[in-house]
Length: 285
Image (cartoon, rainbow, N blue to C red; front, side):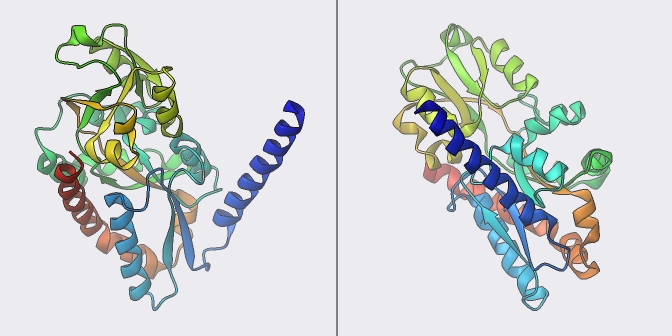
């Protein structure tokens, strides 16, 4: 039975990879560009990109648009970065900490208590004198960072225990994203940082593999993790951007009018997403 399951799983995995490859290897004359996303359709990042896609479609006379694949349909964030890098996927929206695996300099945006509020972060990530070289630093590895987006203020949430001091985290296994900086951060906060893909977190808390996790207010609510980790502790330890990444060669092959649309409208996308996200924070809390 196990062998049969593994065989079927292998076929499904191969099909998924082939399908993803088909998405990205289409020539640049194709009209639909695919973007991987790990959150649901009502998330402000999804909605802001969908709005951007509508404007792109209008500006190009219906020839170009972006199709968003939510809920990790194309794989975990780390997997989709690799797919972007090898040309199997045009775009992905990924957590900032994951890009440390390609360039450790991205860690400067992922350190606790760097930004005083979301407006501070918004100004910095649109300032090309600050982020220009960093966003281009992965192009020799096949990845271009198009922009940074707001992903809320991250807080620790737990299954059974309130967290008011670092001592309260002692002995607790808390999920963090798959980055050394995030693991070390949680360890220094007093707990045990446990890296894990987002798709596994709900079940891991539910079954006791984890004692909790840390995430922003909107994601916590959107993924219904309050059902298994109902104690949301306002630690406010991190305000870390997400990034839209693209395959460098693919993006450079796009028609000039499409590239110009991105150049002219990417800051407006950032502003729209920041405001949408902030509106969702109080609702989620």
